[in-house]
Image (cartoon, rainbow, N blue to C red; front, side, top):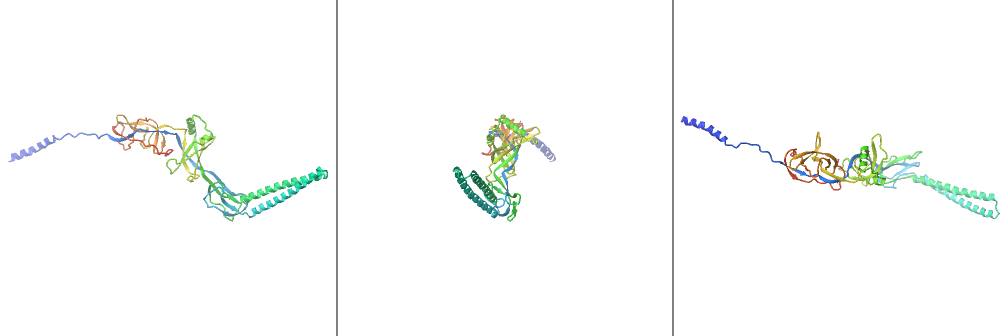
Length: 390
């Protein structure tokens, strides 16, 4: 019995060893190639432009002043309200000025009556002189009185015009459509006492100017793009500009070039440029900080575009990942251009039209690694959009 038991205990380890020797050998199985989205670069006509910064400036700003002396009797607008050209804004006491007009009119009527009498006497003396009935001296006196009466009529006409003008100055009108600031003088105060008293300010908001500065380098680049062509004032006014506020995407406001300074500022090395923008909703007000899209040439040229998000950068510069004909990921060095709506970036150099650009950004595409490319497309910029997004 003991010998059988020992044999059994000895046989068990031998059986375990033999069973373990029959298991299959463990081997490393590499994962299948990653499936990534690829697409050729988008080919599109792109006009070269520069993004600059500027400020909105009112088309016109006028101080409303009292040009005659008197007490302010009426304020006929609401502070900050929009008014139309010709609207009455302030009224100065008119009683005295209306009386001055009546006085001047009466003096003019008297002068005209005296002129009628003087002309009649002159005509009578002229007839008598021809008939040798009157003396030359008498005729000369009649002629002098007639001339004096004519001069007096002209003088009284001038006095009437002055009186009527002063009466007109008692009503302060809006010189153009615009927004009027708060009033600076209250009803009952004396204005125009020896000096022109400022009553308020009116600002014209439609259209609106935008001013900005271009560097000497930008000016030279534009000249090179224009092949040294000099544009006249009419052609300059047809060059489109676009602007965007700090809280807006893209450049939703569109206008045209309006003015270019004839000289470069030697201190800053820049040249002043101004654009004109229609502003019917008065969304733009003076003093806004804006981004300006300025074309750097006339017309557009073909460009290759890729999503800005797929562009990577290291110490050597910017690059893209592309998939070659063997479905192996490669790294290509590029230089970039302007950023377009929809997040598309112009690629200046380093990319070919038939390259398959890696669109996946999940780190599954590694240079030198084999992948399974999945064909995709790059969406074009939104219709009607203009300018870069940032």
